[in-house]
Length: 305
Image (cartoon, rainbow, N blue to C red; front, top):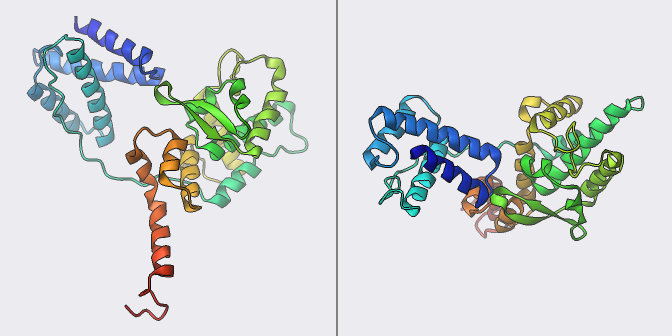
């Protein structure tokens, strides 16, 4: 019965919430771990109480799991027990009052504007580059231009269909987390780089803007990581500092540094909650200090006040 409930929960996440395959697999592992631990205590998910769940979560901390891993697992557990209650598979929700572990606020890693410029310049092929090499660098150029121009998640980028660029001029339709669609701006440079890749790949007949080795499937994350590693070396950057998410953070950080509004950034990044976007307020602190220094009546150059 419990196994059937887990399967039903995972099917609901996929069908109704549009959860990605990686998310479904992570939920399955989390629930397998939880149900195994509960079974060792002689209870199941259908009759476990709040104390059982608290003991399980305390065990995760004793095992040395990182607070973010614990928080992710708790999020899965809360959703699962809410599902059980709504489906009337149990009369209550023992996870309703469970608290997430305290997370330390970590600032996002990002590149400087000069480093992004160097990265894009490194996508220019050598004069004697082979056709395969030229295509690889063209893929890198299109991907990096689009990631930096729009702040896309890598999963959003690699799943883009070729028709994504058919939206209104200067915009692109993106399907994000939970199947939510949003329009994001696309610079002329990024669009031109994407069009150049599409023209080169026209004979491959792929439905994807970034096709994999087999045109019926999109490029894998691992395949893109190898391309990114190569371009980082060409640009003189440490590949360990570079990832698609670092480019997303760079997009957000640079946008705020040039005066963008936090609410507008929330929409652009596809964040459901403004609290997620607030990790970028480290940029705004410098702007606030500058504003006080420039405009406050008591912030004189002679240091008085």
